[in-house]
Each structure stands twice: as structure tokens, then as C-alpha cells.
Image (tube, rainbow, N blue to C red; front, side, top):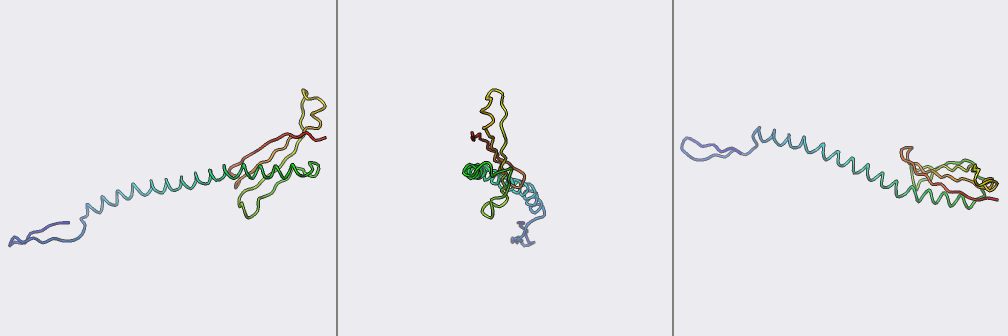
Length: 134
């Protein structure tokens, strides 16, 4: 705000901003906005990662329980998704034989069961267990 004086000594004020005030405010905005956008993007990214690390173990355990309830002979290497409840999440199951010289003949009945949960092919979570099947 600038104050001007008339020739007779009375004051006249003009309402408005000077060019310097406008340049300073634009400079502050130019520095602050990218920082705010970066912080917002990091918050969204961190939220998505945290969500994955909470949901993926639960989904993997659920799939593992379903696989263990069925006959291992009926299951080959399978994969699928979790439907509309968990969009973007996919799973894959693999069952393999275990080879071990130390275990001897017991290793023939031992199976390695791997369940992998992925989210948009960016993040993966795996869980493994061994089962003795006679």
C-alpha cells in the first residue's frame, strides 16, 4: 500500500499491491507448491506400500489355507486374482518336490509349497511351507 500526499498536505492512500509485493508472493508460491506436491505424492506412495504390506500377508495365508485344504495332487502350478474385493492383487501357487540327501527316503514324500501375492506386478510377497504327504 502506498501513501501519497497532495500539495495541500492531505494524505491520499491507494489500495493495491506494488509490483515488488507481487513478485515476492509469486516467488514464495513457486518454492512452496512443488514441495507440497512432492510431499503429497510421497504420502500416496507410502500409503500404497503400507496397504500392500498389510493386505498381502493376509491374502497369502488365506490362499495357503485353501491350498492345504485341497488335495495336493489336484493342484499344479496355478495362479489367479482375488476378484473385485482386492483389485490389482494376484496370486500364484507352486508345489515342488524336495530333494535332500540328508533326509533320504523321507524327502520323497516332502513337498515345498510356495504362495506368491503380487500387486500390479510391482510388489510381491511370498510365503513358503513344507508338507509331508504320504
